[in-house]
Image 1 (cartoon, rainbow, N blue to C red):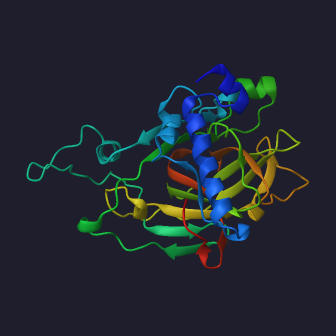
Image 2 (image 1 turned 120 degrees about the vertical axis):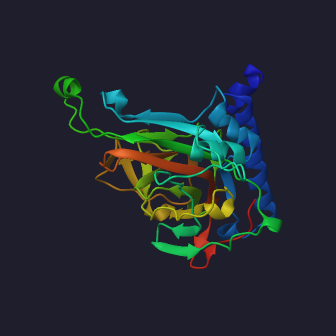
Image 3 (image 1 turned 180 degrees about the vertical axis):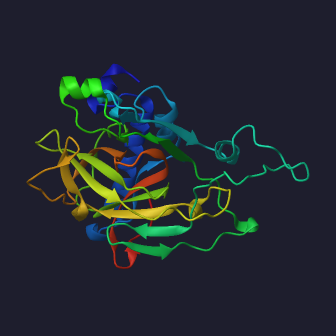
Amino acid sequence: MSSTLRKIFGIPSQHQLHRWIRIQQAMNRKRWFELDVEKNGPLSLWDFRFPEDAQTITGSEGTWRLLDDSVIGGYSHANVELIRSPQEYQRVIWGKDMPMDEKNGSHIPDATDTVTLGTTSVDAANGKIYDASDEPNEENKPSFVPFVRWQGTLDTRVNKEQQKQHNVMRSGFCSMISPEFPVVDLGGRYNGIEIMCRSDGRPYSLNLKVESYIPDDLYQCLINVPPTKPSSDQSNEDSFDRVVLLFQHFIVTAGGRMRTTQRELDNRIRIQSIGLTLMDGVNGPFCFDLARIRAVNYDETGVIGEAD
Protein backbone atom coordinates (compact mmCIF):
# COMPACT_ATOMS: atom_id res chain seq x y z
CA MET A 1 0.00 0.00 0.00
CA SER A 2 1.33 3.43 -0.86
CA SER A 3 2.22 5.91 1.86
CA THR A 4 -0.32 8.31 0.34
CA LEU A 5 -3.20 5.90 0.98
CA ARG A 6 -1.99 5.35 4.52
CA LYS A 7 -1.99 9.10 5.17
CA ILE A 8 -5.45 9.56 3.64
CA PHE A 9 -7.15 6.70 5.48
CA GLY A 10 -4.95 6.46 8.56
CA ILE A 11 -4.69 2.69 8.04
CA PRO A 12 -1.44 0.94 9.01
CA SER A 13 -1.68 -2.06 6.68
CA GLN A 14 -3.47 -3.51 3.67
CA HIS A 15 -5.73 -5.81 5.63
CA GLN A 16 -6.97 -2.80 7.61
CA LEU A 17 -7.93 -1.15 4.32
CA HIS A 18 -9.84 -4.29 3.37
CA ARG A 19 -11.61 -4.18 6.73
CA TRP A 20 -12.53 -0.53 6.21
CA ILE A 21 -13.94 -1.25 2.74
CA ARG A 22 -15.94 -4.24 3.97
CA ILE A 23 -17.51 -2.38 6.88
CA GLN A 24 -18.29 0.72 4.80
CA GLN A 25 -19.92 -1.38 2.07
CA ALA A 26 -22.05 -3.19 4.63
CA MET A 27 -23.12 0.07 6.27
CA ASN A 28 -23.97 1.64 2.91
CA ARG A 29 -26.17 -1.34 1.98
CA LYS A 30 -28.04 -0.92 5.24
CA ARG A 31 -28.48 2.84 4.76
CA TRP A 32 -29.96 2.30 1.30
CA PHE A 33 -32.02 -0.84 1.85
CA GLU A 34 -32.92 -0.71 5.55
CA LEU A 35 -34.46 2.72 5.81
CA ASP A 36 -35.71 2.34 9.39
CA VAL A 37 -32.53 3.35 11.24
CA GLU A 38 -33.89 2.00 14.52
CA LYS A 39 -33.99 -1.56 13.15
CA ASN A 40 -30.92 -2.04 11.00
CA GLY A 41 -29.73 -5.64 10.99
CA PRO A 42 -26.46 -6.75 12.64
CA LEU A 43 -23.19 -5.30 11.36
CA SER A 44 -20.01 -7.38 11.71
CA LEU A 45 -17.16 -5.41 13.29
CA TRP A 46 -14.86 -8.41 13.85
CA ASP A 47 -15.40 -11.86 12.35
CA PHE A 48 -12.41 -14.18 12.08
CA ARG A 49 -13.91 -15.96 9.07
CA PHE A 50 -12.79 -12.92 7.06
CA PRO A 51 -9.12 -13.14 6.03
CA GLU A 52 -8.50 -9.46 6.81
CA ASP A 53 -9.75 -10.00 10.38
CA ALA A 54 -7.79 -13.21 10.84
CA GLN A 55 -4.67 -11.37 9.68
CA THR A 56 -4.93 -9.06 12.69
CA ILE A 57 -4.11 -12.06 14.87
CA THR A 58 -1.44 -13.74 12.74
CA GLY A 59 0.05 -10.72 10.96
CA SER A 60 2.88 -8.44 11.95
CA GLU A 61 1.10 -5.08 11.51
CA GLY A 62 -2.05 -3.72 13.07
CA THR A 63 -2.50 -6.76 15.32
CA TRP A 64 -4.43 -7.28 18.54
CA ARG A 65 -2.36 -6.25 21.57
CA LEU A 66 -1.98 -8.09 24.86
CA LEU A 67 -1.60 -5.99 27.99
CA ASP A 68 -1.10 -7.25 31.54
CA ASP A 69 0.17 -6.15 34.93
CA SER A 70 3.80 -6.74 33.94
CA VAL A 71 3.82 -3.01 33.11
CA ILE A 72 3.70 -2.42 36.88
CA GLY A 73 5.93 -5.37 37.76
CA GLY A 74 3.07 -7.89 38.13
CA TYR A 75 3.09 -11.59 37.36
CA SER A 76 -0.03 -12.19 35.27
CA HIS A 77 0.41 -13.35 31.69
CA ALA A 78 -1.63 -14.47 28.70
CA ASN A 79 -1.38 -15.46 25.05
CA VAL A 80 -3.69 -15.41 22.07
CA GLU A 81 -4.04 -17.94 19.24
CA LEU A 82 -6.21 -18.08 16.13
CA ILE A 83 -7.92 -21.46 15.62
CA ARG A 84 -8.78 -21.81 11.93
CA SER A 85 -9.62 -25.48 11.34
CA PRO A 86 -10.98 -28.60 13.09
CA GLN A 87 -7.45 -29.99 13.10
CA GLU A 88 -6.07 -26.94 14.92
CA TYR A 89 -9.01 -27.11 17.30
CA GLN A 90 -8.31 -30.74 18.21
CA ARG A 91 -4.64 -29.92 18.75
CA VAL A 92 -5.48 -27.09 21.14
CA ILE A 93 -8.14 -29.04 23.05
CA TRP A 94 -6.41 -32.39 23.41
CA GLY A 95 -2.76 -31.45 22.95
CA LYS A 96 -0.22 -32.79 20.51
CA ASP A 97 0.81 -35.82 22.59
CA MET A 98 -2.58 -37.27 23.61
CA PRO A 99 -2.78 -41.07 23.27
CA MET A 100 -4.73 -42.36 20.28
CA ASP A 101 -7.59 -44.84 20.17
CA GLU A 102 -6.23 -47.45 17.74
CA LYS A 103 -9.73 -48.57 16.80
CA ASN A 104 -11.05 -45.30 15.40
CA GLY A 105 -7.99 -43.02 15.41
CA SER A 106 -9.43 -40.49 17.83
CA HIS A 107 -7.88 -38.96 20.95
CA ILE A 108 -8.63 -40.61 24.27
CA PRO A 109 -9.62 -38.04 26.91
CA ASP A 110 -8.86 -38.55 30.58
CA ALA A 111 -10.33 -37.16 33.79
CA THR A 112 -8.18 -34.03 33.64
CA ASP A 113 -9.36 -32.93 30.19
CA THR A 114 -11.74 -29.98 30.00
CA VAL A 115 -13.54 -28.52 27.01
CA THR A 116 -15.06 -25.04 27.02
CA LEU A 117 -17.99 -25.21 24.59
CA GLY A 118 -21.65 -24.36 24.70
CA THR A 119 -25.16 -24.19 23.31
CA THR A 120 -26.76 -21.29 25.17
CA SER A 121 -27.33 -17.69 24.20
CA VAL A 122 -27.07 -14.94 26.79
CA ASP A 123 -28.39 -11.40 27.13
CA ALA A 124 -25.92 -10.15 29.73
CA ALA A 125 -27.48 -6.71 30.00
CA ASN A 126 -30.80 -8.17 31.19
CA GLY A 127 -29.58 -11.39 32.74
CA LYS A 128 -31.54 -13.60 30.31
CA ILE A 129 -30.44 -16.92 28.88
CA TYR A 130 -32.24 -18.30 25.85
CA ASP A 131 -31.81 -21.57 23.98
CA ALA A 132 -29.82 -21.76 20.78
CA SER A 133 -31.02 -23.82 17.83
CA ASP A 134 -30.88 -27.61 17.99
CA GLU A 135 -27.59 -29.34 17.35
CA PRO A 136 -27.22 -29.89 13.59
CA ASN A 137 -27.10 -33.41 12.20
CA GLU A 138 -24.22 -34.77 10.15
CA GLU A 139 -26.02 -34.10 6.85
CA ASN A 140 -26.54 -30.42 7.58
CA LYS A 141 -23.56 -29.62 9.75
CA PRO A 142 -22.37 -25.98 9.72
CA SER A 143 -18.82 -25.26 8.66
CA PHE A 144 -16.09 -24.72 11.23
CA VAL A 145 -16.13 -21.27 12.84
CA PRO A 146 -12.63 -19.76 13.29
CA PHE A 147 -12.08 -18.17 16.67
CA VAL A 148 -9.44 -16.60 18.85
CA ARG A 149 -8.49 -18.33 22.08
CA TRP A 150 -7.27 -15.91 24.73
CA GLN A 151 -5.92 -17.70 27.79
CA GLY A 152 -3.48 -17.18 30.58
CA THR A 153 -3.07 -16.92 34.33
CA LEU A 154 -4.12 -14.10 36.64
CA ASP A 155 -1.79 -13.37 39.56
CA THR A 156 -2.69 -10.73 42.13
CA ARG A 157 0.71 -10.60 43.88
CA VAL A 158 2.09 -7.09 44.15
CA ASN A 159 5.72 -6.57 43.20
CA LYS A 160 7.33 -5.31 46.42
CA GLU A 161 9.93 -3.25 44.58
CA GLN A 162 7.27 -1.50 42.51
CA GLN A 163 5.16 -1.04 45.61
CA LYS A 164 8.03 0.69 47.34
CA GLN A 165 9.14 2.85 44.40
CA HIS A 166 5.84 3.70 42.72
CA ASN A 167 3.25 3.06 45.44
CA VAL A 168 1.65 0.17 43.51
CA MET A 169 -1.06 -1.15 45.81
CA ARG A 170 -2.83 -3.79 43.69
CA SER A 171 -2.15 -6.03 40.73
CA GLY A 172 -3.74 -8.78 38.66
CA PHE A 173 -5.16 -7.94 35.22
CA CYS A 174 -4.94 -9.08 31.61
CA SER A 175 -6.38 -7.37 28.54
CA MET A 176 -6.72 -8.07 24.84
CA ILE A 177 -7.16 -4.96 22.65
CA SER A 178 -8.09 -4.75 18.98
CA PRO A 179 -6.22 -2.61 16.46
CA GLU A 180 -7.80 0.80 16.03
CA PHE A 181 -10.64 0.96 13.54
CA PRO A 182 -10.03 3.14 10.47
CA VAL A 183 -13.43 4.87 10.83
CA VAL A 184 -16.51 3.16 12.31
CA ASP A 185 -19.33 5.63 12.79
CA LEU A 186 -22.47 3.70 13.75
CA GLY A 187 -24.54 6.74 12.87
CA GLY A 188 -27.09 6.17 15.64
CA ARG A 189 -28.36 3.00 13.97
CA TYR A 190 -27.54 0.48 16.74
CA ASN A 191 -28.19 0.15 20.46
CA GLY A 192 -25.69 -2.50 21.51
CA ILE A 193 -22.82 -4.89 20.88
CA GLU A 194 -23.17 -8.66 20.47
CA ILE A 195 -20.21 -10.97 20.96
CA MET A 196 -20.15 -14.64 19.96
CA CYS A 197 -17.90 -16.28 22.52
CA ARG A 198 -17.21 -19.09 24.97
CA SER A 199 -16.44 -18.23 28.58
CA ASP A 200 -15.13 -20.05 31.63
CA GLY A 201 -17.63 -18.10 33.74
CA ARG A 202 -15.24 -15.49 35.13
CA PRO A 203 -16.43 -11.84 34.99
CA TYR A 204 -14.80 -10.33 31.91
CA SER A 205 -15.48 -6.79 30.74
CA LEU A 206 -15.96 -5.59 27.19
CA ASN A 207 -14.19 -2.27 26.61
CA LEU A 208 -15.09 0.34 24.01
CA LYS A 209 -12.69 3.12 23.16
CA VAL A 210 -14.80 5.74 21.42
CA GLU A 211 -14.09 9.14 19.97
CA SER A 212 -14.19 11.50 22.95
CA TYR A 213 -12.92 14.88 24.07
CA ILE A 214 -11.50 13.10 27.15
CA PRO A 215 -8.76 10.80 25.80
CA ASP A 216 -8.45 8.56 28.90
CA ASP A 217 -12.12 7.53 28.88
CA LEU A 218 -12.92 3.86 28.37
CA TYR A 219 -16.48 2.54 28.39
CA GLN A 220 -16.90 -0.88 30.02
CA CYS A 221 -19.69 -3.40 30.45
CA LEU A 222 -19.41 -6.59 32.48
CA ILE A 223 -19.81 -10.00 30.83
CA ASN A 224 -20.93 -11.85 33.94
CA VAL A 225 -22.53 -15.02 32.60
CA PRO A 226 -22.38 -18.73 33.51
CA PRO A 227 -19.65 -20.92 32.00
CA THR A 228 -20.44 -22.07 28.50
CA LYS A 229 -22.20 -25.42 28.68
CA PRO A 230 -20.27 -28.46 27.39
CA SER A 231 -21.38 -29.51 23.94
CA SER A 232 -19.34 -31.40 21.36
CA ASP A 233 -15.73 -31.46 20.24
CA GLN A 234 -16.52 -29.46 17.10
CA SER A 235 -16.67 -25.69 16.72
CA ASN A 236 -19.79 -24.56 14.88
CA GLU A 237 -22.00 -21.58 15.64
CA ASP A 238 -24.15 -23.58 18.05
CA SER A 239 -21.16 -24.22 20.30
CA PHE A 240 -20.83 -20.51 21.13
CA ASP A 241 -22.78 -18.21 23.42
CA ARG A 242 -24.17 -14.92 22.13
CA VAL A 243 -23.90 -12.08 24.61
CA VAL A 244 -25.68 -8.77 23.99
CA LEU A 245 -24.47 -5.66 25.83
CA LEU A 246 -26.63 -2.56 25.43
CA PHE A 247 -24.85 0.78 25.16
CA GLN A 248 -27.01 2.18 27.95
CA HIS A 249 -25.44 -0.28 30.42
CA PHE A 250 -21.83 0.74 29.77
CA ILE A 251 -20.03 2.81 32.42
CA VAL A 252 -17.19 5.24 31.79
CA THR A 253 -13.86 4.43 33.44
CA ALA A 254 -10.32 5.79 33.51
CA GLY A 255 -7.23 3.89 34.60
CA GLY A 256 -9.32 0.89 35.61
CA ARG A 257 -11.54 2.92 37.97
CA MET A 258 -15.09 4.11 37.50
CA ARG A 259 -15.44 7.85 36.88
CA THR A 260 -17.20 9.74 39.65
CA THR A 261 -19.24 11.58 37.04
CA GLN A 262 -20.87 9.23 34.57
CA ARG A 263 -21.83 10.09 31.00
CA GLU A 264 -24.23 7.83 29.16
CA LEU A 265 -22.90 6.06 26.09
CA ASP A 266 -25.56 6.69 23.47
CA ASN A 267 -25.82 5.01 20.08
CA ARG A 268 -24.25 7.89 18.15
CA ILE A 269 -20.66 6.79 18.65
CA ARG A 270 -17.51 6.43 16.60
CA ILE A 271 -15.67 3.31 17.77
CA GLN A 272 -11.88 3.48 17.87
CA SER A 273 -11.10 0.05 19.35
CA ILE A 274 -12.66 -2.85 21.24
CA GLY A 275 -11.08 -4.92 23.99
CA LEU A 276 -11.59 -7.48 26.74
CA THR A 277 -10.26 -7.33 30.31
CA LEU A 278 -10.15 -9.72 33.24
CA MET A 279 -9.39 -8.26 36.67
CA ASP A 280 -11.64 -10.12 39.11
CA GLY A 281 -8.99 -10.48 41.82
CA VAL A 282 -8.97 -14.29 41.62
CA ASN A 283 -5.67 -16.09 41.09
CA GLY A 284 -5.57 -18.87 38.54
CA PRO A 285 -5.98 -19.80 34.87
CA PHE A 286 -8.57 -18.31 32.54
CA CYS A 287 -9.77 -19.05 29.02
CA PHE A 288 -12.00 -17.04 26.66
CA ASP A 289 -12.87 -17.84 23.03
CA LEU A 290 -13.94 -15.01 20.70
CA ALA A 291 -15.45 -15.67 17.26
CA ARG A 292 -17.34 -12.51 16.30
CA ILE A 293 -18.29 -8.99 17.40
CA ARG A 294 -21.32 -7.25 15.86
CA ALA A 295 -23.19 -4.00 16.30
CA VAL A 296 -26.84 -4.93 16.81
CA ASN A 297 -30.28 -3.65 17.61
CA TYR A 298 -31.82 -5.60 20.47
CA ASP A 299 -35.29 -5.56 22.05
CA GLU A 300 -37.51 -7.96 23.99
CA THR A 301 -37.80 -10.21 20.93
CA GLY A 302 -34.02 -10.56 20.53
CA VAL A 303 -31.60 -9.30 17.88
CA ILE A 304 -33.46 -7.42 15.15
CA GLY A 305 -33.01 -7.83 11.40
CA GLU A 306 -30.88 -9.82 9.01
CA ALA A 307 -27.10 -10.05 9.27
CA ASP A 308 -24.91 -8.16 6.83
